Length: 378
Image (cartoon, rainbow, N blue to C red; front, side, top):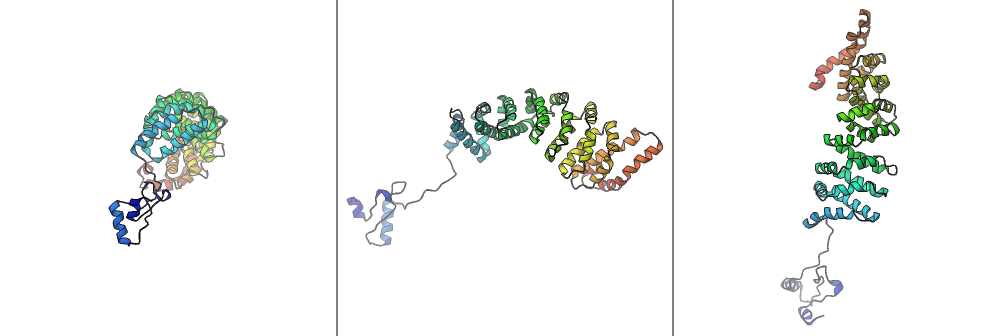
């Protein structure tokens, strides 16, 4: 206790001080509350305020953080890399602007190199951060410049970690949304590799990635040369509804040319698609009807679908609750209705085929009055 402190009427010890080194306990001399308050104000003695956690950070930290994360992933220790990748991932999800800042800090080339790291956990972390950076256009551009696609395709084949495979697929899907990205995937040999993967291990991720490849003209040509039609027809027998759905979508894209339609017909695709028209999942019904609509442009496709009982299934689909299913069913019925004009052996044959379409006429008249103009005009 100093003489001045004793004279003023308050004392404190080291354990009684606040974080700002000012006293947080006043011991008056029994002179009353009013006097003590006047003394506190005169000496500007503040009461102790407890520090609280906050999520706010300084502007200086926001500017330094991306560069610090980029430097941290270059460390030799696997543990340091894992911690840096985990912190970077949480940082990126905090605000969309952080992703652009991280790309500007030059993280993409280093993350691309980490996809080939010997440690599986490091590869998983790098794949996660890349999938997050691919959600912004600057990240897409940086990956296209850094040739990240080649490393992503290698990550798709990672036999040790399913997380790495799934995250690399997710990044490929985001890249494939852009023509330049799809073209780079095709140039890197992604089409042939993904067709083989779909044959060996049919999964939604593999089928979706292949779907982006066949959007590119060169990728479509390469896929047809690698017997992608046969692969997709085989996937139609899979037990998983999402796998069947994306196989049907790919089949719709693959069967653009008349030659590819004939190839899908020869592989037995029509009969399998007709069987899927009554699937319990509406997404499968919609995708299967769309694929059948594409294939039945060919005369042989019309004949096989008609003989497999497609007209009855399509008539039932006119009452479906989903507009996409109804739209594709109407257009496929239109394709099949041309069969009686294109292939007509006798007048009796014409009458025989017409009877199959009579149950659909009443519902088609109702659809013509639908407020959806696209559906009504179809």
